[in-house]
Length: 528
Image 1 (tube, rainbow, N blue to C red):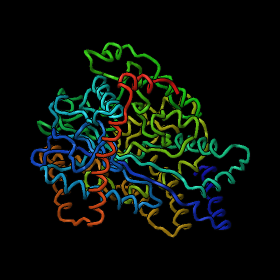
Image 2: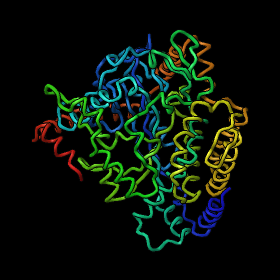
Image 3: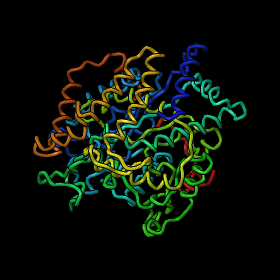
Image 4: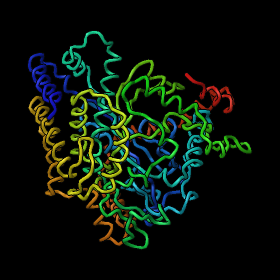
């Protein structure tokens, strides 16, 4: 264990005991879960419009769409405990699944899609006629023009996490920092967390990656690193998360964006520069052609959300405010973990143990230290993640980690030992044993006492005859479970009311627009 982590855990224990500041160990989290709507008979992507019973995808508080009209996104509010977040997510799934049953549809349980017959099989999400709705649609049209639509069907789980004010009191006291403003201190600390996350985030796809297999329609010409186990299934022999590999959501134009998270200001400027820098291949596409937008602009990034990273510093932005301007003016408010595959064996795409592990791991990342990246580390991180997501199931394989060559098993074991010490401290101070249980479960995976999710998915895909068949069977199992489970009448009424209200809010937005979309877009894209 590093000296920084050891000292921080001792100081945290002492602070909580002496100050009796219970909020020091209160963490806030919200969940975003993506899932494709599919026909429950053949698993094909739905071509039906977003169900009216689910409200407006533009304005609904908890049910929206991501890239495709068929790619649902469920968003919980912020909760001070894991159980509350999971309960809300469970209720969203319950309501939506009952509505989808009426349409003969289910939620695809995995991150990688099933059979997709090219771009024409993926409808782009629609958000109505308002300027903000047209902006969202045109941005997605740009993603289609740049990367194709099939790649945009990949789904995941995003975990939004922040620390309570009590924790910040502890950390400022521990670091003996009385000069830095509260806003800057939080931002700098979150960036330290992000650096430590990126140093060790290879562990997460190893433990939780559940996309070692794909339907061959995703890569019709196959791939030399994948094995064809059936006419429609490709599997990476030792892969854990093809979603996070170069075969998944990758972007050549962004490969040269040098983002190392050493300084808040440098990060913001790098992203802002990318939004203003033309990219020759995108210039060939054109922007507005024959009266229709093919993309918002021809720059490296159309907007900031196009930058793909496994973790993001975030702040809730006001309407029309650019995310980078919100970060610059008000500082980092929370972080968004974007590396997690969906758990196909869970009806909601994740388990309680997974969230408790993430909480523990993120505390570890905050307390490990605040060393800046070297340029060598930044370069090494790119290849390290690729090796672990494509080779991770071979636990005895020796690869080059930042600390030097080591087997995946030994390196993961040492990292988990440190995370277990964090869990021990959290359990000692809160009385909640879920932290220790969650970490011990992951240690058991590395010690081969429990199977890795990627191993389970790989085996199941072979046993069922194909990846698509295996995932469709799970989708329908989950759908049956939802139909058997009653929905509280009060909660059902709240969802129904929100659906109606969200449609009304969309209508009001559409009626209030005064600018043409061209004028609106020109204003929106101006630097802030």
